[in-house]
Length: 156
Image 1 (cartoon, rainbow, N blue to C red):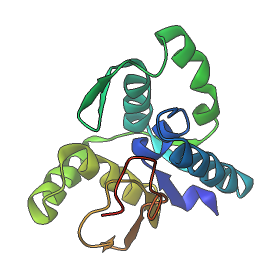
Image 2: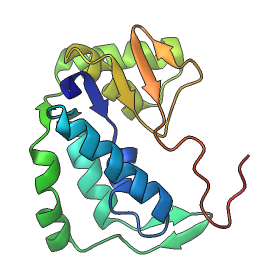
Image 3: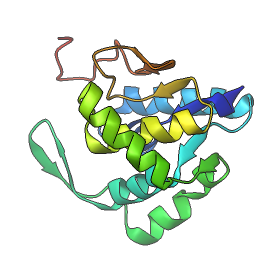
């Protein structure tokens, strides 16, 4: 069931990534497969990060890139994720994120996502930001782009 899979912003942004076409194709494939099994889970936090990531300049291989799209275009493109199961971030999730940050050295947003995924009953997180332990407190982390090398990148 897809609802047990939490999708991180890093995966959703790749759906629109024209700079890394192999990762873009893989992201679309992964999202389509998840949707076929029912809506995957995201948090309100992930939706905010996605919108911000679409409309903000970003770094790619040390080079400043322009935003992926305008605010108006991003507003229209958010529809596909609005069909996902969206969970709130609660005060309990924030407390849990603080504990996770201390115990596992998560960065802030990854801790919030883990706490939200755990509270939502997810057992898997799809992200490019896989922690050093691939399973933490019953939640398995997977990078759907493992092994994909874009032109001009090394496989290391």
